[in-house]
Length: 239
Image (cartoon, rainbow, N blue to C red; front, top):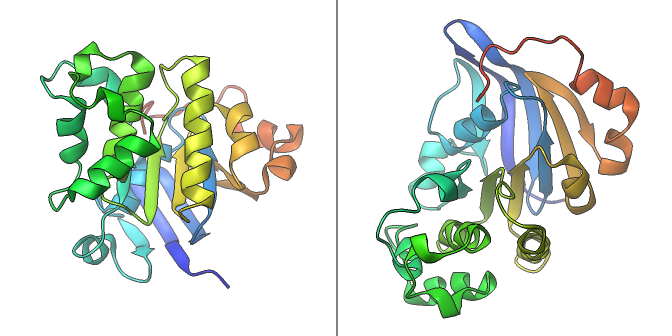
């Protein structure tokens, strides 16, 4: 039986006394490739931040391999790609190599070369980030996220702003990271159709767990109607 990489128990989180996550109970086994889908304001990004320990739940518990995020991060890294990061800070005068190196304070040169090679951007390592295309920038930030050789990789909308060719290449690389290197991957996405073919499991989130299971079972009209009900008002668009 695989180890539990991430365990969420009775998790609640609120903004201004309005809960954006309620009673979340979830176990993510080691080696899982999980896609998280849901409408704006459903709490998807907030959930990733709780797993990372950036914010703490008002109620409930987050465990990474049986310990709190704070304890886990003292000895092990978690790879993380924030939402739209490659579109917001690419004007910084970093080369690709410098950017990837900045991903972890205890970087090793071999890991930097490995991450660049995984995303097929070794030939770009001396180029400035601002000189790259959108797809190349996204690969550079993803290489930064894995340069610490994490066991867990959290991605928030990784396909935003990239062309179809780069998207296909990126999806192949993520599949390899999961299958060949055993990295547990959690992806927040609005690109439901694409990740239905990639993820092993889909979590439908709308402040609560709507449903969880294999993509072919979850992505049916009955569940999509529950996940995206008409005339629903969400208090925090970017939650």
